Image 1: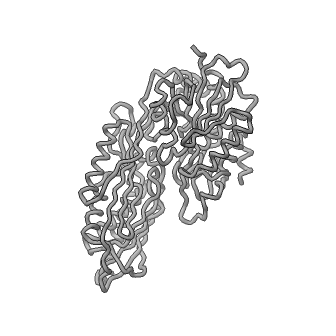
Image 2: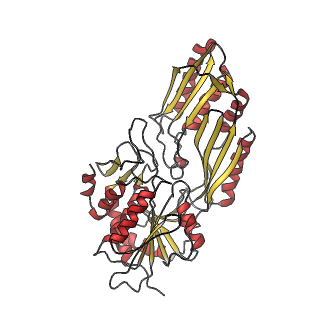
Image 3: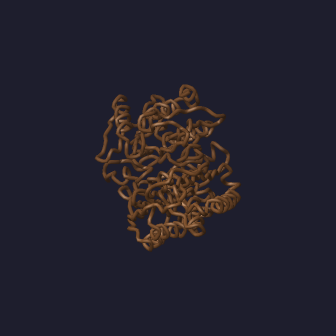
Length: 487
């Protein structure tokens, strides 16, 4: 199937994407893709270095006639989000992505595709390898761990790069030119609890929430999609309030930057409530499915009887947890007052784990305004501290403040309008781009972000538009020929 991808136009781009997708590259496990990129640069005879955190930098001199242009940094991240459908048998640590063509889209078989940000990486690789493409001097910057901590960008020291302009290739709509983004902070609540003996005359059930779309916890947060952890909590709250339901364990969600698609909980109730519990739960399920019938038509909630456990969660801690998750904000918190339709601040209750005496709730709070980011983070902290959790903030990274007077912005807008007969949308996004972080050590670098159309990033529905890749490739080539002259 990957040969089908290699025959797509532009072949230079899709062939490099296929090469890259053959290399396992989960966040925080980028050793193989770092080695792959180091070998790639060295085989081309180009200066290739790895910095102390694992970022790879490859330098290529300007082509004849463009030596007087400003040096550019072309930047994308090497890691990808790993998500798969429950019924997909796939090992991200050992297997390459299995791709196929579906009309105008390239997709993966039951997993994330890695077009975020693999198409950006492949673009840079194709340009570095080409002997025909005209370009100024290039510093190709391939960062690590963008998806789970931005540690590559955070660890890149000042003075390594000489470029005056940075082209970040991590925007996911081909009619958009991005000039700003949100920052983020991980909010993690943990505590221990006592396990009690399962009461006599109890019945055990497994509750499963699945079939949700999931998606990017920044770019898709405003779409009203279902969050499996919040939906599960509604069921647990109702069961506890009406029937004294007790939790055995919960496993909901996976990655902080992915809207959770699935949650599974094991619970018990007194056997005397069996009939009433089933009827009540069905009413709640019907209500939830009615609420989400438009945005989540494939939502499935199942309750099945299971083996009775020996231990259950302490009721006092359980009540605090259910009420804290109900209270904790999920979704859009504030819209921007300065840019139309831009989400300013949001939170994703990404992962809830309850098992063997330990609770963990992991959130990702995003905002383009630092004070608003920590306002929401503190609201979450307060909710979980009230039920006895220890709450920590980690992985905080800054947003990227828009610069509407950017010289490279003028270049891109002019080229886009000439090629497409319409103006691009100049936007700021609610995702976490690395530009804001990179700008802390390179404050004078003129930065811009753009890319081909990718939908469903961070979910198994991720897909990349073939026609958009062709449009984007043409855009990239003309940008390279029109980088401003050095002053």
